[in-house]
Image (cartoon, rainbow, N blue to C red; front, side):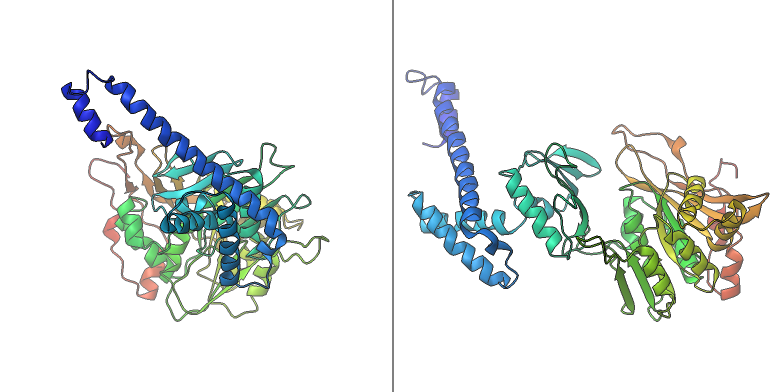
Length: 462
């Protein structure tokens, strides 16, 4: 008799003379829990036995993926046979497949990577895995079998992109085959066990229409940014961690004409440009002897010798900012980059600091003059309290006045619209009523653009 039949009989009183319905359900539930625990224990034992029995062969580069999977399947077959379980042939194959995924794949992370609603995965030690769904962080309820299992997964990820992680180099940035960004920290830096963070990227690059649908940008801003890219204005995307800077950079890069040569420079390759004529450069960390490092700054310098029409720097975070500004000022118009800052004014201040990190003893006025003449537009993006990502400012850099970089907002986010009953922001990006000076460039180049979008909504002053 099924559980639903028993509950129906219990509600009708048919089983009342026998045993109370609640008691009749408990043993079945307890059996299910025990079976689940037993299966989890079996998988954990099988993986530990597998690692101890095959040793270093699991990372043997001379084996192809198919050979490694076949070898592991054979070994798992022997391990499961030694458990003397009463399993059907299908159950046995299914169990081997599950354990194989844990041993050779990314374990419990694999199902999270396959789940479209998950945008970020955060592992705090082997027993706790958090995920971000729709802008909210929740406990996934999944865990690794052991710290050793988690370390195996981390080493598997970083080794595929030529990076290393060990006690002498306990933190690393890497990427998955789909471009998802990975950061890993292991003991002794991670005190409570290894920490792993994966920022997922969509298998299909987002289009500008997707950002409009999400409310990240308005159609008017999309039209403006399209014109800015085609007019070869230098654009800086500013925002905090996890605000969607790289996603927006990907979308803006899709506006670049297909007949232009693009050179991208990144710490770990994340950009997915859709043009054909793209050269992607990736920095290299030092080896175990501390030699062989190739920095972003060196790549920016080298990119200038590669006849680029556009230079796209994934993120400026050091002395390479000076070389990028000089490139923007010496004929490489149309460059795009991102930077960590919370507001357009903060972006300028941070850029000043980064230029000072280049080690050049430049006066502050000279740095600000470089910034004001190089950067044309700052696009500020933020992740709001409701978890959504919105462009909050589109700001023009006007120039230098009394040693101050003058900024002027063309669009700002309307926080005054308040929240709905679900705590979601009702606001949208609105025009300030000021027409940017760079629209004159649109006229010069014959780029069509509707200037009416700079008219503020009725009832609002400029």
